[in-house]
Length: 166
Image (cartoon, rainbow, N blue to C red; front, side, top):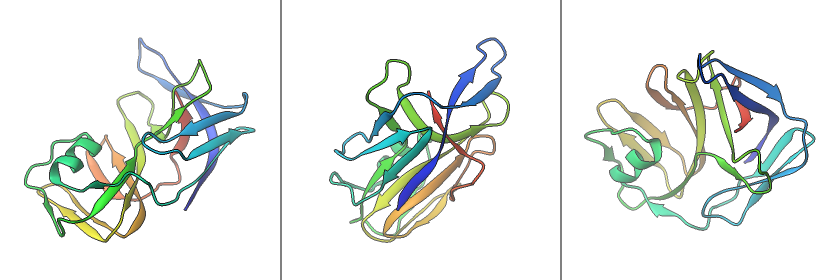
């Protein structure tokens, strides 16, 4: 799987919470993943990262799901207890004093209307279910869409989200 896309710079008005995006046209940057030696590049305002099997897989558990998605789901059940995974919520920017991370996201006017995508790798198919969540991951990479407006998580990669530098 290859991640590609135009990069934008995120700005926020601290008084009103209004969010704006400006196309990135600065110097070449390197983006890395925590826990991996693999890096991507931002060149001429375009992000490119080739996703391969991660080295550091962790056992998927209910605790792991809550930690990764930053939501406290109760009553989570897993279709298998021996699946290992790895999640990329964002990329770290290594060679910039101005920017620290790159995330695929969007805001609908203000900073509290966030939508984002993270990428989850699992080594086997697994279904995660509970009172307010039901996700069926296929072996390999999966895009996980988090809509904080509706508090919904699903397996999707909406086209209106953009790569943003912060």
